[in-house]
Amino acid sequence: MSELEIRIRNHPVVKFEKNDPFTFRFEGQEIIAYRGETIGAALHAAGITTLGESRIRHRPQGLFCMIGDCSSCLMKVDRTSNIRVCTTLAKPGIFVERQSDQGELGGMDMHEIEHDKIEAEVAVVGTGPAGLKSALCAADLGAEVAVVDQNPLLGGQLIKQTHKFFGDEELYAGSRGPEIAKMLDTELRKRRVTRVIQSRVIGSFPGKKHVLGVLMENSRFIELQTDRVVVATGASENMLSFPNWDLPGVFAAGGVQTMMNVYGVRPGNRALMIGSGNVGLIVAYQMLQAGIEVEMILEAAPRVGGYEVHAAKLRRLGVPILTSHSIVRAVGRDHVQGAIVARLDEKSRPIFQTEKHLDVDLICIAVGMSPCSELLLQSGCESRFMSELGGHVALYDENMETSVKGIYVAGDAAGIEEASSAMMEGEIAGASAASSLGLETEDAEKRILKARNKLVQIRKGPFSRKAKDAKERIFRMSKEIRER
Amino acid sequence: MSKKTPASLASFALIECTERIPCDPCVRACPRGAITKKSVTSPPELDSKKCTGCGQCIALCPGLAIFVVKANYSKDQALVMLPYEMLPLPSVGEKVQILDINGNAVGEGRVVNVRKDRNFTNIVSLSVRKDVAQSIRSFRVIK
Image (tube, rainbow over all chains, first blue to last red; front, side, top):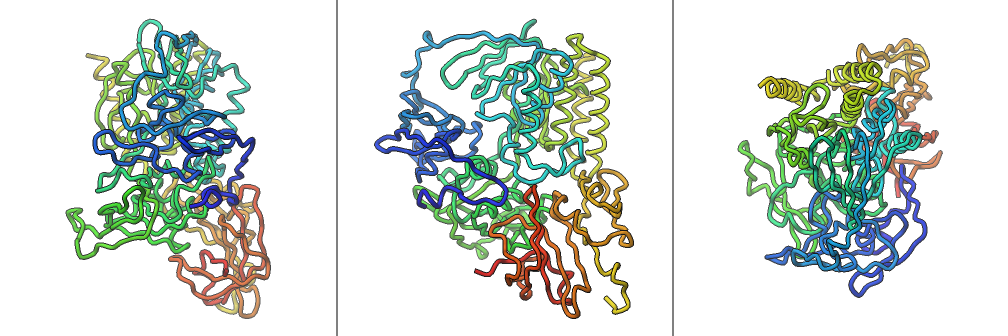
């Protein structure tokens, strides 16, 4: 693909502003990037898809999740190893290299790292729908709030969800994700909230004052002291194992969405989507909008996983959705050059005679998500593995408070659901945190009740049943633990 | 559709939303209150007596699940209004390939109107053969 083909010039929904071009160096090559672009997006737009190699077998590795969750894009930037280039902004004149070892601390002298302190009453980790809502709510109730996010932009995954959202007026129904992110961001700017972006929370130390260790822009260390913590870290996408799953060109569906809808860069020209849940269906549709051909969508189960309305949008444009089908292997040496797919028998084994070769250069994996519970587990929160919620989740009560006093959780980190329930959980967590500090307790109580009622309403549909039941079980387990 | 159908009844919205999605913009979209929902998760119901086929609901449905058919557009043609979020947008007068629910081409239609929406769900009105009108869900621009 040439640079011209890779960058999206015309898009039916998103206007990409490509301003202030500059260059940086990748090994011997000069790379053009635009303001606000990450190193990963700029490299991909320049046709560089192999960003490193695996340590033992030296297999090529490329971008996968695009949101700083996986480790597939670790590179050396200005001699500092292990930089996730998918979320690290490109800057003029930086020097980027591939990394084939585990890296060393060469570029970073721990003693010389600047060390700042920030104080807050409520610290919110993650600025997706749950985090932003809880920050807004806590700030409204008078708390001094700090938000931390590892990405350059606020809004979590809203910024790439260019479809119109379901819901009702209060839940921004009919608005597209980037618009919702902008509205929430504008609201946040109206309040005095400390914003710590491009910063990753790498340690959580509960105590009378909770301390969060924050690594800012891969170079500065910040000690964030806070009375309450809301963990709204969202989820990471699941991988599916098949031969050559690690080849560049195998992307998480959400990674594809970030690449095309946030950065205006096409991750490929002809795609295969694995998984027909709402993420798979929505991203497949958005690939068509980005000018990427979608060869087909495969679903291992005997029926489509996502909403029928999303599936219908693809069917009427001629995209086949094949149930009881999956990928057998990816084909290619340095990059995906095809895929072998097959029908599955009743025991989910591929039927050899039905194998088919597809000429694709992009394989998207949309097989579910797992809550990002790491900070909660590190903080010592009681947790359970709940497959209905996507994996390990901390236990929490109806105020979204975990077993560690003063640590709250909301959104996908509390179990995979969707944006509207995440917003309501965020509201509850933010209000509970503020209320526990003795701030506007009456007002907080009203907000909590309102959000709980809303959750009851939006969870009435059959699609919410599993998550709703699982979360009610969590409330009960949390109560049992407290009573013990 | 029989010849005796009054003209007002021959224009109607087709709402293909049966799954109890927690969503309600269609209810607020209708200027005549023709679309109702018992609760936010119950499927929308259309009062076909109130529906004039104005198409306000088409661009507001987040699921792109509403279509409008005007059965008596002309003697042998019906008008179909579709939500469309792809590029290129066709021009008025242009001939396009018309697609059914499964993306099968079932003939040609002519673009009668393109209503651009500020939220990027454009509404394309196509003049098509009467016998296929109710099954048209999209179209393909002929290169």
